[in-house]
Amino acid sequence: MPGLISYIGALADDLSAVATKVSAGAIDDIANQTAKSLSKTAGILIDDTATIPQYVSNTAAKRELPVIWKITKKSLRNKALMIPIAILITYFAPWIMAPILILGGSYLAYEGTESLGEKLGLIKAHKLTHEHSMPDTQDLSAAEDQTVNSAVRTDTILSIEIIALTIASVATEPLTTQLGVLVIVSLIATFAVYGIVGMIIKMDDVGFYLIEKQNNLYRTLGSLLIKAMPKVLKSLGWIGMIAMLMVGGSIIIHNVEQLHFLANLGAQLTIIPQIAITLIIVPICIALLIGILITGFIKLTPFQA
Image 1 (tube, rainbow, N blue to C red):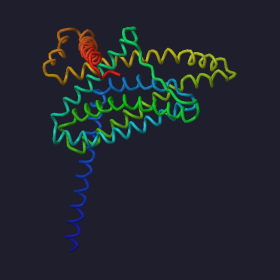
Image 2 (cartoon, rainbow, N blue to C red):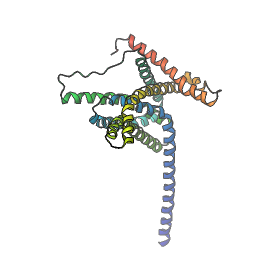
Image 3 (cartoon, one colour):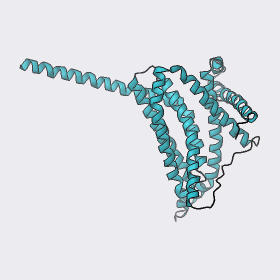
């Protein structure tokens, strides 16, 4: 009996050691795959960070952070719904991923092209209007809800692309690794993006706080923050537009077989021109072409808004 107990104890120790090694290996795999996935979705994260502040910029100061929190919660909810769907698609209908990516890339190309047209004065800018019977609290609540819904629609498209690119990068990994990477990327994509958005939106409030101090350095810094706020928002508009075009074009190039050759156009050049052509110029040109075609189609159909 003592020998049996010793044997069971040794076996338990061996199993525990194996489980520890497996767990450590799984954690390492998840960490490595997460880093790779984040590098592939970086453009979309930049796009999301640059785009969302424009929705919140006209919100009353005291409601800015609550509105951002509302958008954050809905973004998390959407990603939580997308993760199991993405895993099921990978296992039962992997062929759907490429069309989803192409549709998302085309949408980003259209949005980026329309934004460029508006900035250049070629397209009439869209203006959100809130027509209510009387300017009471309920009206302000309705306007806030519309702001949140508009931001969430854009976030949903970008979230779909983030989830699709992430699951595509770990499609051959074990289920636990896929799930772990998807969850971590989703959390980082949400809290990092909206944390930065919150800091950007409250930049002018920090400025007003600092200029009330007696210290000249604080007052100077506060004044700079207040003056910089409109310029930052304007710059983010351009950054978001360029990111949309770059990301949309890249997604289309990598998921349309006939366009794969475009990814190697600058292969014979030195590193800087190669990066400029492969990651910036070619994707933007493809996105603009797709965006112009979609815009033209919309203008010629009776379904335009």
